Image (cartoon, rainbow, N blue to C red; front, side):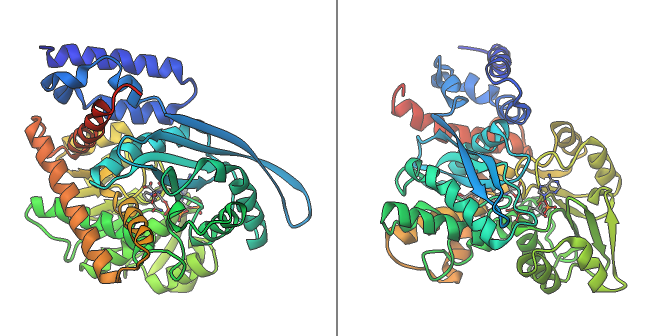
Length: 452
Ligand code: NDP
Ligand code: 2IT
């Protein structure tokens, strides 16, 4: 019988090894640390998980594809971007996870996202493995025609690696309905197949699921509501700071309002907006989804209740709830201190790994309910899996049915994380609960399927 501290020593050695074998991938190291640092209790308690090679296999992607993406801008100039698809783990189902188009994308970023995705997808209880992809292409300021040519070039390589039973990409930062449309069109053209389940987040009317655009934000708010219920409170009357102004942020703000809470901020990489009356969603959607504009335009058009703060930290704005919904490491130790000082009750991650490890530690120590992204933002990929189910059955569910399924999945993820944390001696620690519960499901499948 191995003790917990012996197990922790083994895991610490493994983390050092991961850093050596994967140099210059700080985000991947961070994601691996965050998971492996919480696994000692379950590995010590269940000897089968200490089997040599199990965790080593889990941290090594099954396949990593890197490719050239050449494309021409509207002036005919040639640009060369880099494309990635990391197929991390398929023990539970086809690789599943989004595509990110952002200049900061590199292999380490895609690996961190793919690694997180394994556990997130396991937590949904559905049959989906973990993967992620993307490119260092920057869609900001590009015309529709440029984005289309880029997507077509990207898919001209990606198509050979994906498929409804193999690997099913979707959106992430910089990839929404427009990009999924262009990607699907090129896939269909190259393969001469109507294979609806090869991508999710498709348009309604050609295989997309109702509520998929809303699912990540809605799901995160449902997760936050479940954490608040544990504290004997609900969302009615609570104020919230939300970062980002993209897909996740917009539908987070929408669901908060539906449940009686009030989101008073949104942001982008240029700064943040604070609106004392609460964010006007019609205006924000008009600026972001239709005009593809910036949040400073929101403040200009909203009138006296709103102001734009260039640069600065959205976490300086006092509120009961904080829902980071932009990008990784956007909420640091100093931000956590400010939130705690201002009396924040819950932080629920809509983005992937937005809170630095030091900030997570501070929030948990201060008794703030903390929902890690792999649990709290799993609603998006869960509804992607429901889109795949509808595609396979050649049917389309009502919005009400999808929303009910989403709500029941989020409730079940919350209780799984909550109960698992308690079972392993970390009551209230959703990070430990999510990591262990996700790990158990994937590890059991990997052990059953042998050394592959
Ligand atoms: P969008 O592209 O729709 O929006 C991204 C938002 O975040 C924009 O407001 C963008 O501002 C801001 N942002 C992005 N990068 C940075 C940065 N480096 N610094 C400051 N602001 C930044 O993406 P999504 O809303 O889809 O994704 C947001 C987060 O949610 C990501 O972490 C993603 O991985 C995660 N997520 C998304 C899911 C989905 O279904 N879409 C599912 C689960 C998680 P700007 O325009 O200035 O760059
Ligand atoms: O991070 C994520 O979970 C996503 N970007 C959504 C992935 C998906 O396949 O819907």
